[in-house]
Image (tube, rainbow, N blue to C red; front, top):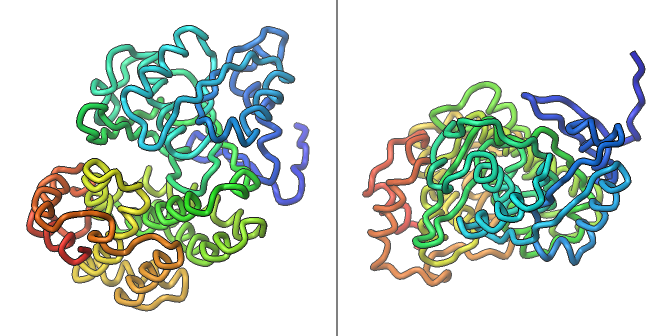
Length: 390
């Protein structure tokens, strides 16, 4: 059996059925990775690929670079650049129409979490039919789905490590978590150079989002040794590198830490789910258009304090990954990182009205993730959290 050594700083591993490839410039191997998934294309029978992305990444040249490498490997690549922040059922529907016309053998999500989620949503509709609402929940796909390849260009959601697509209903903006094992990416390419040119405001909100994933997944009611292994290492990597990454994205070490940390935090979610901070965030996004990372990051220090009476030891274990002792110190460090990001720390500053907090609390209590929070949640508990953050 022959083995070709990887370049220095590169590595590859099969993890839970996902082939993960890491290293600066790893995007240039996308044609080879696609040929591993659809081998007939490497044997002279051209395969068809649909890349799901957004206009900004097309303008940045990342998509053209991927298309060139795929073409050299024998693939006919089409591009759907209609993904957008908080993708809706309408975005997915339009992408599925393009998939029906192109008839791809492989779907590629290239972009932030929105592109990843949109690619998964397109896969559901293209292979299963119906509407996204039909797949709201877990394991609702009854037919095979297309193989997929994920290339994250932000250190944020970790969607490339998860089975879930978060799709908002166009009419009321309610987020639907649509998850199926068949929707997971077959291969993931982690190329730290792709996050070097991310605008600072985007780097800030996505980085805070990744941080929240590590913190919440470490303590959920579904936590386990594997999820905590991922979440603890994700927290260590992100906590130590976030400020340096924002200050100088050209520094390679913080950039690599952030991308890997976000991926590991996504893997932790896949193994253990999320909690009350995410339940609080979704109504804020739906009613006020708040960017998800802003909403969840603003609420996170308050949720940690609230949960501290139930899981102080667990927060202590998490904090020790970064030399932080105790619940208050952890909450203070999270608030410090939020301040370093430049994001707002108060709901009032984000345009939220105090008289709407009770409605937000009612909706937060209905969120799926509320059931995984380590301290029992009800409407009053969410009202108290919103009041603390107001």
